[in-house]
Image (cartoon, rainbow, N blue to C red; front, top):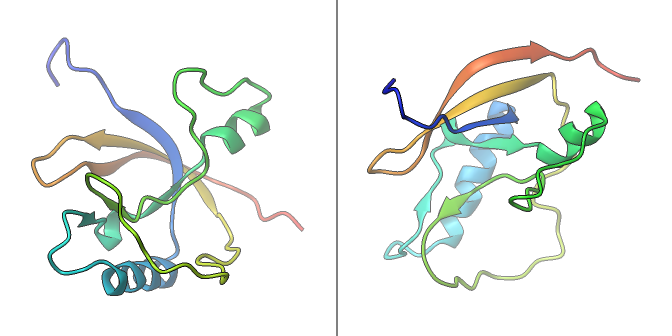
Length: 124
């Protein structure tokens, strides 16, 4: 790492493999082949938990960017119209660990690598 290089870190959780595959297939079927959007590779799908984590730790969330729990399915420029549906895209799923990710800028898009993981106990 270069001395003045800025680390891009975030906390989230990896998605269960079946859910990640399902989401990838769904977004692939919705985006036109000639789209200016890049679909997030299955291995890169994750849930970002900024507000949920800040609340759990009793600390205020960042005031710099309005982060919300989300899964980035694709990235691109401009508006994109997709068919509207009332169906839930993601059903409830169990989070079994928190993960500290590092985001690396790459010509093909951001790549995320795991720095550390902390297992969570299942709550009843």
